[in-house]
Amino acid sequence: MEATTPSPQPSSHEFGPHENQIIGTAGKWIGYWSWIAIVSGALMIIGGILDPEDLIAGLIMGGVYIGVGVYFRGAASAMSDVVSTAGNDVQHLMTALDKLSSAFKVMVLLVFIGALMALVAGIMLAMRG
Image (cartoon, rainbow, N blue to C red):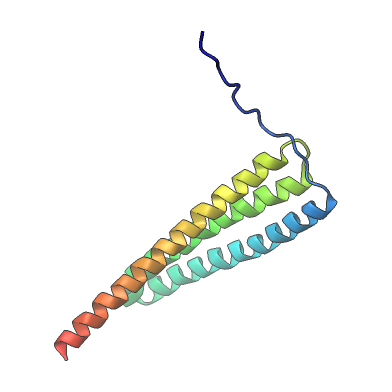
């Protein structure tokens, strides 16, 4: 007869006032950053529309900033849920961390791609000169 291990049950841990204050403050600042990213993305798109030479770059970068901002917005909302609800603190915090992780993955990938493009452009310029 096979021994089975019970599947883990969701934790019903509730954070105390001190932890809620820290999580709430983090959520507030993440929310501010989300709006900065979303507004910046919208401005990039508008800039691209107003300057047709920058249209493609404005649409791509603006869309990325808006997308990242939406992930950050979701993380801020989940952190707010940790503080304002009872019974699902761990689940809300895990949702927030998942959204933060996704946003940072996109940002790291874009920085890497940008650095790679700058390196290629530098090499091409050096070869021309």
